[in-house]
Length: 151
Image (cartoon, rainbow, N blue to C red; front, side, top):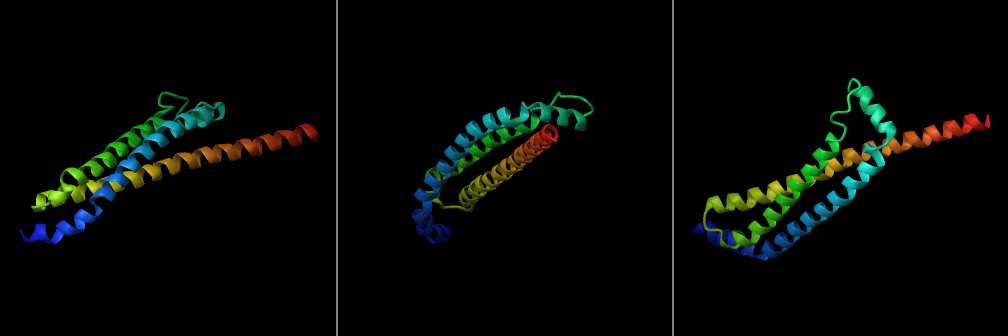
């Protein structure tokens, strides 16, 4: 097949690198999930100030207090699976591309893994921004309270 001859040398060069890259990114995401989700829960979602702010924005309800954290955790897991699947497909199918459907599978999973990776980072960024804003509010409040005590 013409497609096989044109694609195969390129695929062969990058196949191992793509495999190790995607598997590495999957393990990095898994480590991030473990560390960051626990830290955010301890340092943000269980804080009284966050609970108060959440109640104000949700008509006094705290039913879904941890929903953003749960979504982040679930999204990390899906991203890990997508990255590992993209890595495995490089080895399993990537070297034997002899039809357009196989090219579609390899390229599709690779692009899907990359999209999930970038989306995970974006979602993490949003959660960390919320956390840093919370920290800044706490520092301003402490400074204001210290100034009131002194003054």
